[in-house]
Length: 204
Image 1: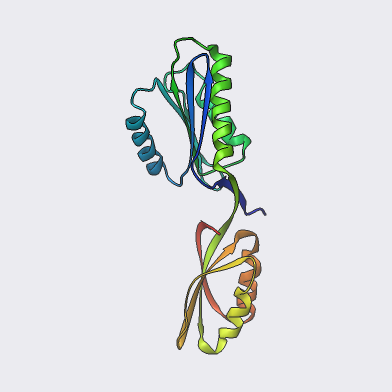
Image 2 (image 1 turned 135 degrees about the vertical axis):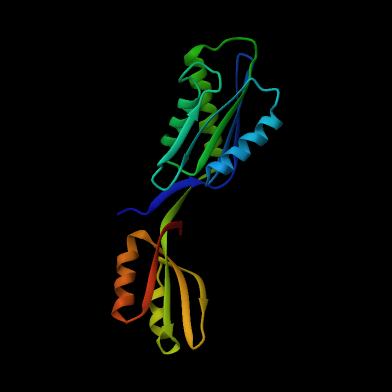
């Protein structure tokens, strides 16, 4: 079982020129389609005089949400090469937008594919691809007398403590990498600590 996924660290930007046409590549770390719509609306205002605003995005740990758009360019000449660069970089939770200012000379479909590909690739490189881990949250409840057992289990490279409260009735919230979830559950059970697992997947 793998719990690794790749995304980008920050906003990336590039500039590619061909026959007087200018292609501005932009890549954003995103988590929701609502966030994507807000970015696109902002770009429409900022680059209001551009001919095209082509894009592609991938969301979800399993890359289950995705879309691409040519925005008036010939079918398959813009959105698809942008999307393919996201796939080639093996990243998710990313929006790639390439804004084109037409230079008066047609590039043809091969020229467009290359331009949108290069602009996206260089923007991704500027954004820095990073490795993250998928995790699940576990809430542990225990008496103060069991604190040592709880601390021993949570002092683990596959565990990150989110929150904790130590009193007569103690509680800890931890994030556990998916690949280690069954091992940690087994350890908690072996020392008789009560716990609940949240099915929602989170970033470690």
